[in-house]
Length: 419
Image 1: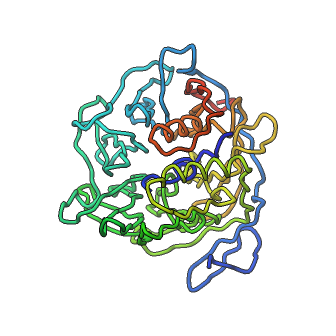
Image 2: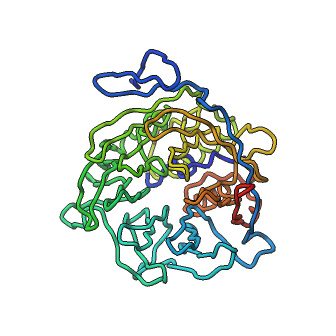
């Protein structure tokens, strides 16, 4: 069994009434309480576009010289080199466009330029490469030659604030940095106060604008974990457009993306008719086992696992400048020869097309990350690697029958046919 490849699903617990609008035609703009809503149907304006991807080279795998733990992000530098984030090995393998490994940046540790289990990677406004560490939450910066370049901490690491911070993601937005994180304050031996937020910061770590904040209290003497009630923004659910607008999926079970202006005001909300995907019994039990393992230290914890996957799996801007949305169905039930499919919206939220990647691969287990110039990088075995990392972290989630050794991960560089 494999789970859907979303951080919110596979890393279910890192630490541990919706808008109802009158149905409208696809792309119709309506206003509710003064806020513009783009109501899209289930069929895009231009239909489906199939992109045939052809392999240029691959590295890793059983016969390859390179070994990967878990490649979770790909970035292309101004130097044209390909930077891969290995979350499990806490390093950044660097490749030329012809597949030659030319460098390895960072390593596991707590020294300058070192990190532990980085969840994301981005080019910072100062040109350095930022590695997003989940806990304690900060961004470790390195130059592209590997030289340590300091750290970025939301709040500047002010010790007077107290508590802890776990970071899920960072996105560069011009000179600002958009942070998705959760602040944790211990209220005593049996409680915690938490604030899950998305906010922009300047280069010194000073908060500028808070776009989303969900604050809540955990009482461990009467603790309930309800997946459908989380209201949590975590991995890959935030992105920024070239015009500075910030796009956030704030609701687990709804196909809904709130678009904020850079100053924090709501610009619009994007909707699309969508039927949430039901988990199979096997998938449901796997997630339940994971949650029970991760919450085992909380006596009598009540655990309610959702019958469905999260509606959305990730937001990003594609090489065409449009908003590309992965869903819980993107890698499943695809036509023969199709690995995965994205929904594509204009930056203003109109559903223009779906794009399908035609190439060999396993849509449930592999991921494809587009490069700025329109090529793609396929990472095989991503879901299995996340599950292995999760198990290594001591959160349960594995059945004895599923302990078969996973195939070594491969990274495949793909070009669009005819380019």
